[in-house]
Length: 295
Figure 1 (spheres, rainbow, N blue to C red):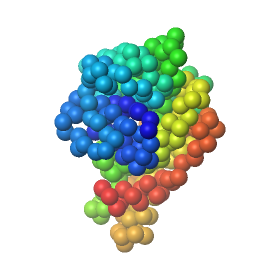
Figure 2 (figure 1 turned 90 degrees about the vertical axis):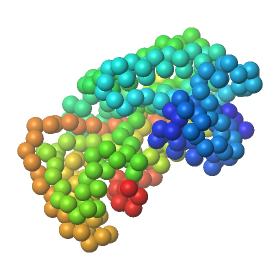
Figure 3 (figure 1 turned 180 degrees about the vertical axis):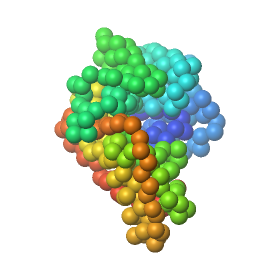
């Protein structure tokens, strides 16, 4: 059995990754949460506060194979984001005290910004241009991780993650489009030519699980993680309407409103796929079909 620490408690990615690793059967999971008492206990799963890892002698003396840091505010509020960065400072200090083998920091595709040509894929060598407080904080988290482990033997990387698709992310615009269609309401979109990159939560958790099997391999300092594709807002709306008609018989009209938003995002995932022999299994259409069934 291997020992892994996952921060983020009951957050979406932490929860899905925990579920997958428990099913894998090869991991003892130490799930860091501010409210560990609210997490249901299970075999090979222990919910703890971060400080316990160094204050509890039994936990401090264990050998840890990996730490996956998913905990981070989704807010644009500067104070909330500062608290996330302060917590990362504490996590890095604990990681070095424990002398763990590997560290994965979950970052965001937002660090690239959104003003790109729709035909250009952002790869890991591209200059960063974060456009909001959240993306700026994520970019700074990468600097903290790289500098924090610069003179250590801890294998570490930053995962720039595409937007996650899950029925539990009800505020994402794809989920909102599906909700409109399920209630037989017309879909209104602004512009339609904006392009977005997504990854299904099942693919995201499976990719990180795969990566954890390569802890002994020297990782690159950053990896993009997505499907390698992008989809226009209009394409997504049409896909939602088509599934609503095909699966449920609903006739959904799409109304396109004028807009000046030219946001475009497409991630190259060649580096991750090459290093870890991984490819996504879920298409955007299959992810949207799951949203119809589950949300």
